[in-house]
Length: 314
Image (cartoon, rainbow, N blue to C red; front, top):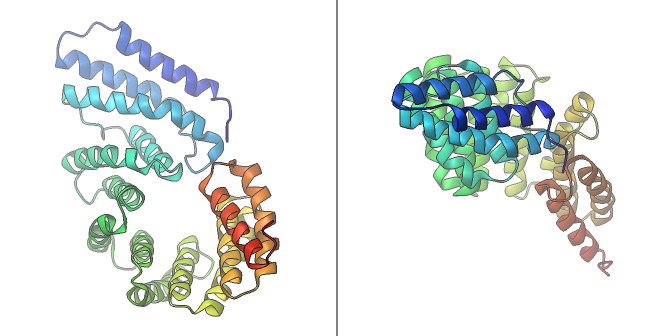
């Protein structure tokens, strides 16, 4: 979805470009000083929400600026993880690259950031693990689930050791591993893991919790993969209701949950109900996230499948 770039973002980008262009640099210490000034300028503004497509144009401007800054900082031997606000911006960039389907570009950036933070903050620092999590996500989309699996297993191990087996962040990591197993088609092992994670989430976090809801979603995906479509539909509908009540009908989480419901209705042979839902979803996706958003494209393809099954593809 095309939006005008926020004036604060555009000005911050211009100021950083001017810093590197106009500041005389004669040695590594001078370059490090410019890098710190550039970081201060970028972190003086609020971090845009990387999950909101309306902010993606801002990230299209910020991402190459941040990448260049990291390159200069590496040349100067200046660590990128000193300032918490700059770490938050880097994590936002990595989320944006994943959410906007540019995971391949996110892999080298996530690798660089994670190595730097592990060296200077430690491997169990929360932000280091989040950077590792972003690396796993980008590898999942950019290289395949098999490449992300060992990274996800390491994250579960690190969070279990540092936070405890039933900490919310550990349970969130188990959900991510469950998604990976589903993608790999190992549905029986995924169902075992995801069902156990769901039970632990309900016991320790309660039923009205975001991570519990995600555990239910990935468990439903395992059931769908095993052909247990009626059980999957029951869970997918519960997930959709949860997002609808908390985020509204037009949030991407609600739309993605409704898309799972429509996909399962089609698998059960209820093509008309799937068609009706996908037709509504397509309009809302286009209005909310644009025609090029992956959820919009998937819904358009699934609507075509519905029409073909109904012999109405013409």
